[in-house]
Length: 127
Image 1 (cartoon, rainbow, N blue to C red):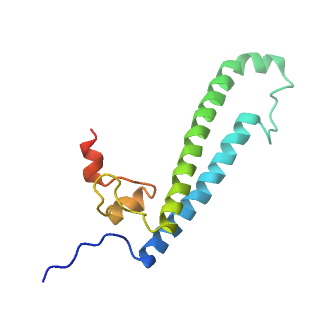
Image 2 (spheres, rainbow, N blue to C red; image 1 turned 90 degrees about the vertical axis):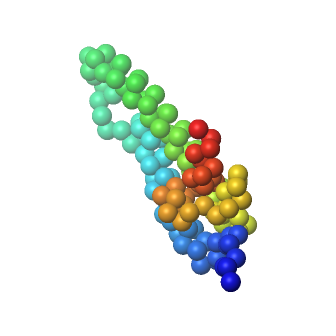
């Protein structure tokens, strides 16, 4: 007798994924805060505003790094939002179900990319 294919992860499996997501979310928020403080110089002890010569020499580099930090902060915020959406899916017990195929996403994929909404099969079809 063939085993019926699972349509969702068990509560225990969902709890494991929730723990992974919460850990990633905590780290992502810390990284986001660091990027934000880099952009705003919130806790800066450098000579940014005290040395005009230094400022002229470094202006190009600091503009670029502020831009880069801004882009990284935006990406980090998007990542945080994806992780939060994954937590909502866990609460609704729809986590780990591919939005294209309706089948379960492989556990290994979810451990690596906990906010994934597509199975590898569906992801490869997008190319």
